Amino acid sequence: MFRVGICVFNFPLQPTLEAVLNFRYSGGAGKVEGYYRELSLGVHVDVEPSVFFTRVSTLPATSTRQCHLLLDIFNPTEHELTVSAKNSEDLVLHPSECQRMAIQVDKFDFESLPQLDQEAARFSSPKQLEEERQHAQGCQINSKLDICWSIISFHPSLQRHGEASVEGALNQLVLEHLQLAPLQWDVLVNGKPCDCDVVADCRVGDAVTLEVKLTNLNKNPVGPLSLTVMPYQDYQNGVQNYDLDEAVTFVGSNTFFIDVVKPRESSVCEGALLFLYTGDFYLNMKVQDDSARRELPLAWFTLPGVHVRAQDTPLQAGA
Image (cartoon, rainbow, N blue to C red; front, side):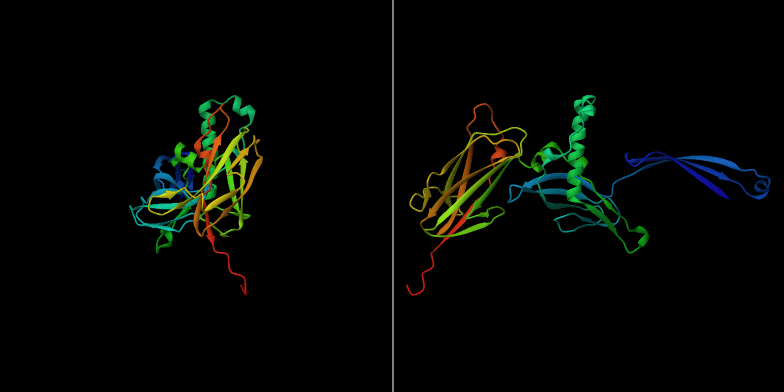
């Protein structure tokens, strides 16, 4: 007869499981007399993850509010393994195989995360505050990615599944690319948003309304700013033609002035332009900070690309 007691010292925060197994056993005549023996056995187990993220990087997406997270995933197990995530096809990895998974994710507004209370922040070192901030960011990213793995096996006893975390694999550069820019720009042509490779159709000779909305997610006010719209044609051979005075004309000015925008508020610029010939046109919008007191990052002034296709006006019936 055996009775076993287990004392676990550290698990699961550490990649090591340490325990003491306490055995109490007896038998035969000793058991009848109530005698038993005790044995303590120490156990040290190194716990290895089922998947490794060997490299994490990002690529821009067609939308300024999204990007592609690239994960190089290694399968260290002896079994075939499947990795799944939101907005991505499942990835099947053979034993000791490494493949890349691309996940399209919405950028994160890290400024909206709950702040550490003042009492805790006062007694924390800058290093501790930074670790707390990165931990909160990592938790938010993991919740959106929802990366899971499962071991494929015909034997039910070998089937396993679990969640994978990218928290420890994210560096500062990747976090910056995943962060939603503090200045968000929305462009509407004829009342319809232009983002994610959307083509805006219009008629030659008709006034095309253009609306640019700036939302300030920064903690501080921004501005004044000036916005200049420059139409061009892309010949798809490396040449971009900006000399379109006879093909495109603005109703009013092609430069807009944006006054100071307070935190969590918006400002809208409205204008119109005419396309005099058919064809595919693009709008290049440049923003300049008119305040000489500071220089804002260029990433804050990234506007979505605008593609306008001008078509002939249909003839009226009986004309």
